[in-house]
Image (tube, rainbow, N blue to C red; front, top):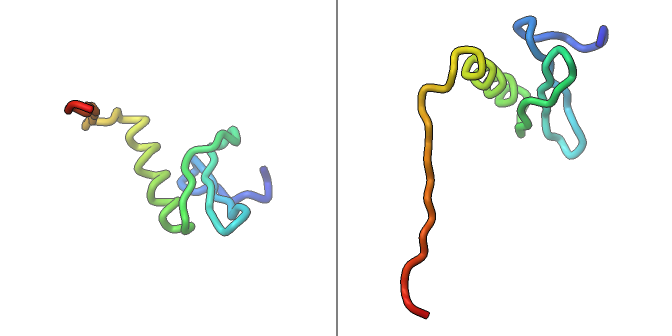
Length: 69
């Protein structure tokens, strides 16, 4: 991993096939995929902060289709 530049000493970002960007932690585990390097860096910082401090908002979704066929 010596050729990869760590961001915030926690992760790095690589440009992938088809122009997407993927972030990885120090161990090489995939974290976030995005369309731009800036978005990938920002989203990865948000994700890692949430993982470290705990995500405060929880979303619950339900789906129900009612009606007669």
